[in-house]
Image (cartoon, rainbow, N blue to C red):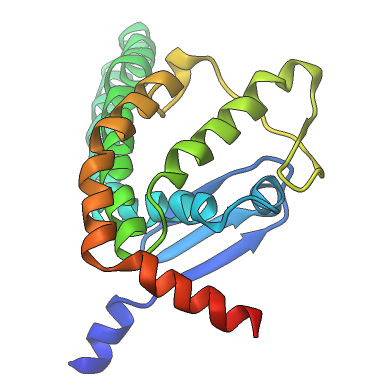
Length: 210
């Protein structure tokens, strides 16, 4: 039983080579991040990358992948039935409506939930939750200069990212996410303080300097 519990709380992080700064969660406690994401946060406070990873951990904890798969199965069954009945126009409209009116709002709600829990996870691990806002600001700044095709990470290395239009994005708009995080920040900072994180971090950094 103890081995099963240990496996349940064991996380694996894989890094893949890609030009787009990105991270995503997979069932089974797996987190995947790209080399471009690491480049983007190279030289930045580690709290920022921790916030991104905490967000992805939250997706797994909340079982968002399972929820999304279940909803996709229901939608696929409806589309399949429409095609069998010969109503191809209905199938096409249903597919478009699902993407714009069902899947995206559902996915955005999951992102909001992951933002909330991700702040708590980062704080519980003694990473300053305020790093989450800076992390999202850094990503937002990169997307703003994508018209030119290139941007610079915290360490000065070139990275590339492509941002879809807001209406087609599964993430809530940047301003909305920052506002939500700001509202949740007192709760996360209280968790950070409750765990005496400042003292723990001071001792850790002191050992690193030796």
